[in-house]
Amino acid sequence: MSTGYTGFEALWHDLFWEAEEAPSEVLLMDDFLQDKDGKSLYVGSGSGRLLGPLVEAEHELGGLEMSPEMVALSREKFPLAEVVEGAWQDHQGEDKYASIVIPAFTFQLFSDPQKQLQRLWEQTDHLYLTLFFPWAELSGDLPQNEWYFDRGIQLPTGESGELETRHKIKEQGGSLVRRHRYTMKDAAGAVVRAEETEQRLRFFTDVALKNLLKKTGWEIEKEIENLGDEDDLVYVATFYLRGC
Image (cartoon, rainbow, N blue to C red):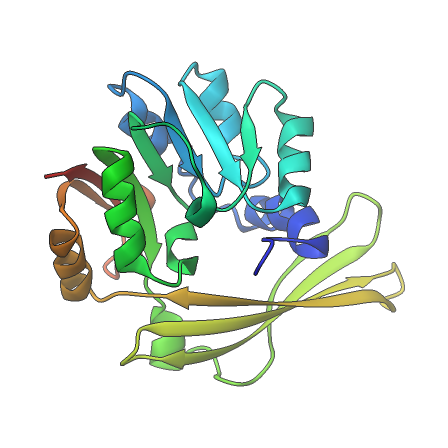
């Protein structure tokens, strides 16, 4: 069983997000949580990058994170944010949460989306969900079964970090397997250490997703494209869902 992010994948996670300068989900999550009375749960809260600011904004929100390394980072950076170590599939929490938030594509790592949506429906009446669609992989803009440079960062210690990715995609089955290779290099460009990880994700067409939500008892209250950025191509979709 996976234990979540470890090693460089955990240590460099926030640095890659900061370097990318991508829109933050904090404002969307803050908006979603505004009218939720009672305790909410953040599934896959990671290093506390989003959880911490929401707790500081006085939302009654606790985290659930399966990676011991990410839990340790979260508790160090945001000691006021309560985080439980464990996987959603094994979690025994409140009888019913005011809401559950699953941002940053965490839901797509679940092996049985229908089963987990049904379980989420039993645990809350309000669900926040962000999903991505792999246009670049499907269109061939990114080469399949080949390593390619993904992104790089300058580390606070003076070394550099590089991320390379290799993927395999099955459009009909809606599955994407990504291998990541993290490499630390010294100031002269020599490799200090390299680590590899693998992710298996599910993705959904718009029709398939909406059929799945209907089948599992969810209706869409609000849908936000690309985290609020204007773009003709919808590569990220955020949903405020209500149990029906």
